[in-house]
Length: 312
Image (tube, rainbow, N blue to C red):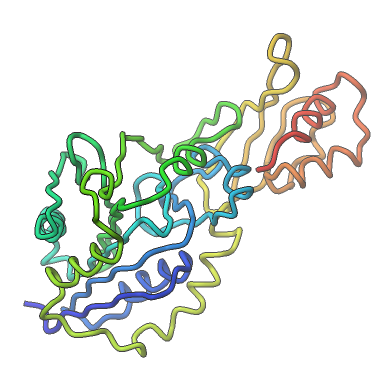
C-alpha cells in the first residue's frame, strides 16, 4: 500500500505551470506515495510528446484566437483545453498502476453527479458513442502519470477550428491524432458545471487523502520555463519532410523541405539552399527568401508568395 496519498487542486489556469506541476510531482513525491490532481487550463491546445504541431494544429487560428500551444510529457493526440474543461491526474507507483481502475473511479464520480458514461477500448469515457474524456500516460522509472480531460462546457466550435494542420503533405514518424466525435457533459446532463465536476471528483476520489503542501511544488520553475520555450514546443518534434504547396491550385506544384529539431536541413529547388538552417516558421523563411530576391516564376519565388499568406 502507498504510505500516503495526496490531493492537489490547482487554482492556476496556466497550462505550462499545471503541466510542470504534474511532471515535478511525478519526479519528486516520496517512493510509494500517490497523488491525485485537478486543474482547469485557460484556452490552449496540448499536443502529445511525440507529435508534430504543424500537422496537428492550425497555428494561425491558435494565435489569432489568443490560445497557447503546449507539449506534454505523455503520448497520445492533440487536445483542446479551456475553462470548460476539467483536467485530472493520477500519479502512482508503477506496481499499483491500474488505468482501468482509475477511469472507473472517474466514471463513478460522474455517476454520483447523475452523469453516466462508459469506458471504451481506447480508454476514453463516452456517452452515447461521443467522447467526453480522453487519457494519456507517462511511465518514468517506478512511477506512472495518468492524466485526462473531462469536457464539461468547453468551446467545441473553437476545438474544431484549431485542431488539424493546414500545410502540405507531411511525412513523419510522429504520432497522429485520432479524432473522435465529442460532446460536453453539460449538454448531455444540463445543469452540470465545471465547479460541480471538480468537487465531485474530490469528494469521490480524494475524501481521505492528505492535502499536498504548497512546498511540494516549489521546484517547478525550470520545468515551467521549458514548457513555454520553442525548443520544447517545436524543436522537440521528430524529423519530418513536407511537400509544401506552391503556385495556383490549377497549375501549382510542391517544394520539398526536410525539418529536424525545428530547423530546415534540406530544401529541394533552385535558390532554396538559403533556407537551410532556418527555423521552420513562415516569418523566418519569408525573411530569408526576400534577401535573395528570387527570380519570378522560380521555386523560391513561388514559395515566397505562398508564405506571405501563411502564419505558422
